Image (cartoon, rainbow, N blue to C red; front, side, top):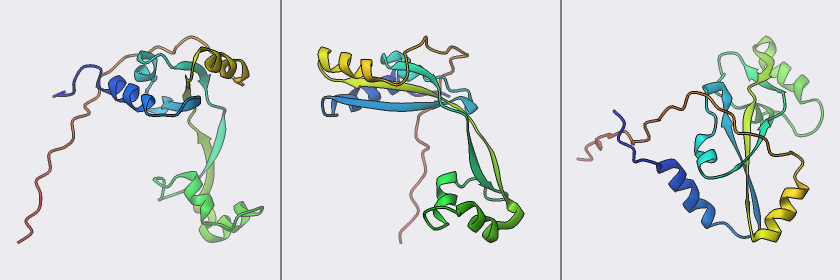
Length: 149
């Protein structure tokens, strides 16, 4: 059952953006691997600039929950990380393609500041991606407190 209020996500995003200093450029991503298209960003007029670049990430078999950056941090900074991690994890360490994400940009500032930032953007604005727009249950789970005494 969905108990969330209409436009709850876009309202929250809008309020957060108003707290940021001006001028600012905010970049956020919607995870395409779980069929997110960034509808909350679209509803709050973010600029869509396409999918993130194709990249690979490190994965440890049996520890897939670990982020690639967390895995990399287990080795010393600098070159030779792959070899060092291979010694630690052996054949359990592998590389895989990282899912691409939808990239959204929001510019905060007066009209001139936003125009100047837009001209400097590496990516050009394109049409929003479309797909099945689903509503998500954002209601927190009701968990009873444990007894203290």
